[in-house]
Each structure stands twice: as structure tokens, then as C-alpha cells.
Image (cartoon, rainbow, N blue to C red; front, side, top):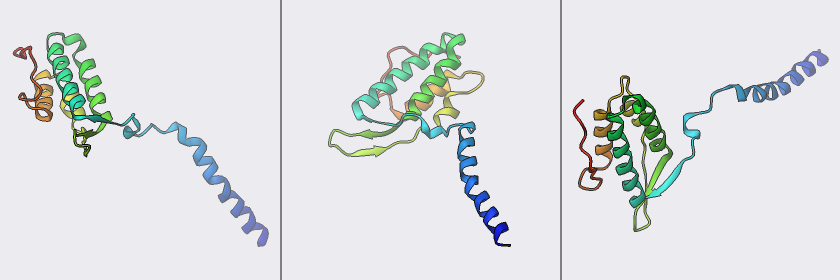
Length: 132
């Protein structure tokens, strides 16, 4: 009986190695993207830039979905904003995928989402959004 217990014990030792070797087959978690903290000025500038991209995509239906996906991925990478006084506020853009990656592509909804992140008083965009 002692031999049987020793055999079972050695099999349990191999299990973590087997599972670890198969872990590379699993998809990477979504939060594994490069996470970053940006200054408030950079954050506001980025939102203004993304709104301009979204508005340009409204005129180019071929690149619309690609643009929205890129903007959503960029936003999800920003995890914190640092204010001029040095304080840091964590931010989450988990709603970006749902708001920006609609099918069919919906630049008006994307612009509405981005306007919620940074109102027009702070992040004004020069070109008006064309009617959809």
C-alpha cells in the first residue's frame, strides 16, 4: 500500500507542471495590455485627439470600425490620471468597447461617450460631427 501512495503522490507533483505547460494555450487576460498613468494635460489632449479621429471616421465608413477599435484599446490602457498637484486618480474605460465598437459603426455614440469623459469646455473639437 505504501508504494501505491507514493505513486499517487508523484503523480500529483507532475500535475502543476502539466497545467503550467498548457497555460500558454489560454488567451491572455484583457487587462494584460500595457497599463499607464498619464498627466491630466495628456489625458485631455488624448481625448480631444480621439474625438477628432472618431469624427473623421464618420466620413470614412471603410475605416470606421478600425478607428473605433484602436481608440477603445488606447483608452483601456490608461488606468490613472495624475493631477498637477501630484495626486493620482484611477480611471476605468471598460465601457469603451461597448460604446465604441458597435456594429454597424456608430460615430455619434462614440463621440457621446468621449464627450462624457471630457466635456466640450475642456476638450473642444473643431470639426463638427456630420449627421448620420
